[in-house]
Length: 220
Image (cartoon, rainbow, N blue to C red):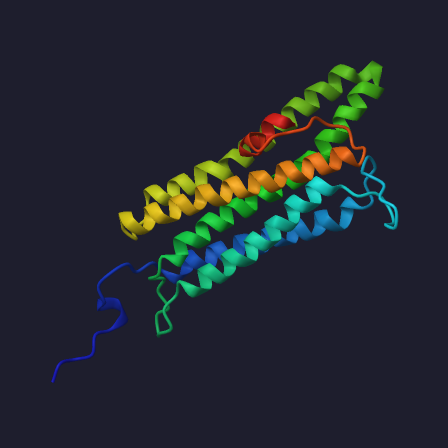
């Protein structure tokens, strides 16, 4: 009588469940940061005044942060779905790679939502504070550089490393890479729409295109 094959002896991809748990922990931190930032946006100055709403509306950062929330929850579902329902719980499904993509894009949205309001404040302060113009300019360049590196790492470097190291085969990896590009373009389109709407509401800024959404830090 053949012996039952254990989870450790099954062929195919087997990724330790701790790898998935670490990603879920990171998503938890990301959601905590987004929640804190969203609660403080309405108390910041420089936003748009919309009739019927209390306080000011920072549309573009709020939309980006809410997209980060949606991507984070979608990534959580993908990560949990990648695990086997057995005594080991190894991650064997390609949804783990999908979760990676969603997680990195959620982090990029969070970085943009965190840095954009502060950089806009520094831009206003740079114009208004003539005696400290150089100091405000230096701070703005430093923060834009740091935020730009973080955004690029989350939006491009992280997914690229995941695709290169993917153990799920070329066909699945290529399909998810195409999905990543489509999702990246969709996020860029939504970002551009939010920015243009915000400008129409009277907030200072330039009218961006979808291509600007593929390199958000260059607009800071």
